[in-house]
Image (cartoon, rainbow, N blue to C red; front, side, top):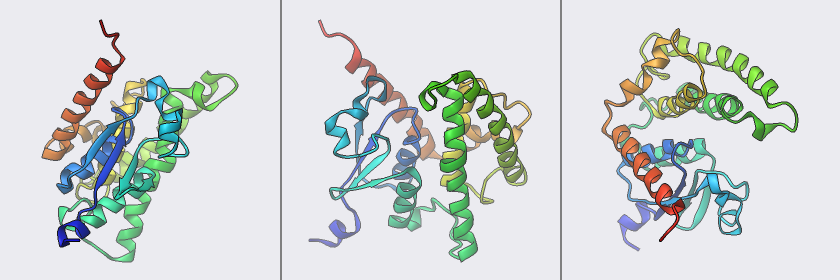
Length: 226
């Protein structure tokens, strides 16, 4: 096995455009790592079929194959990619325990707090057997509190950790889902301008282009063939 083989594993990312797996697309693109992208059509229920269940027992994206070994959960994949290519600067270079804790706090906010909240805004019927409007109302209340907190953190520099990082890309995904579900960001200028600031990063623009290509590929896959 060559040194290149040891340092650059074979990577396969399972992704659905619009899902939080787009953050992992950005991470791999910015890190300059070669990877294969495999689409999982969540709209058609592909995530629940045996082929994907063999990859992700919970039927979620993202999932990352690392030389055939499965790594799941968005924050874990982001942390892995950042550790694989530390020179890429996906997180600030500060390696102190406090800095590491703050990185994890940002990822945990996005994955553990904002993710379920925006899911409740976008598709409340998926997480209740009762009245989905009740879920949406409660999610809206929680979103107002949580996004206000994120706005306060970003208000000084525009970034969660003082300079841009994967936390901001993950946060942008939550903002975009909430905005498309009708959440009003007009009073939260730091969050409202987050996508524009991230668009200065070439890998973010590549991620957006890949998202469009993936959407087109899934649309073509779903269209009836003559």
